[in-house]
Image 1 (cartoon, one colour):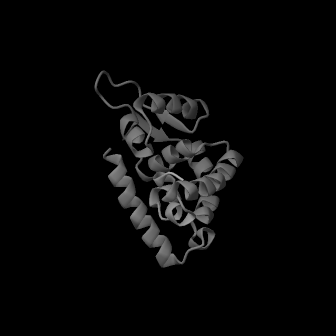
Image 2 (cartoon, rainbow, N blue to C red):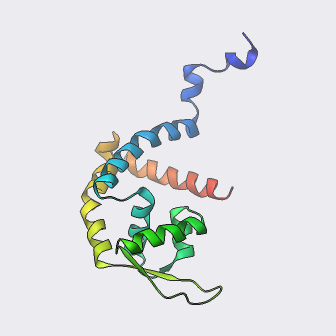
Length: 151
């Protein structure tokens, strides 16, 4: 057996934190997709609605940064959300100026409808954690997110 194959044991694979994160993501993502499909939303659409609920006067560029999508993708996403009546955008303010986005009443209602399920998915017991473990996991994930965002 080649030497590089010897290091790949179940224990070695289980000790890879980024790989464990990817594996955990898949299970959690399935839960989110179930909630989002019932509401006819995608995860990024939810992220936009939640960001706008928390910060009512964001521009498209800032929404792209906060939801981790490209500026081109946020434009397409805004069109789909606007066509559904979930957001409104200000008139194009001109070159180099941010186009502000506002959550509509329909957008608030859509967000309100899925909020209980979002809280359930994030509940410590739903994740198999205690409240303190969930808080620590969230703190650590924010550290990882900031670190990989620099790449």
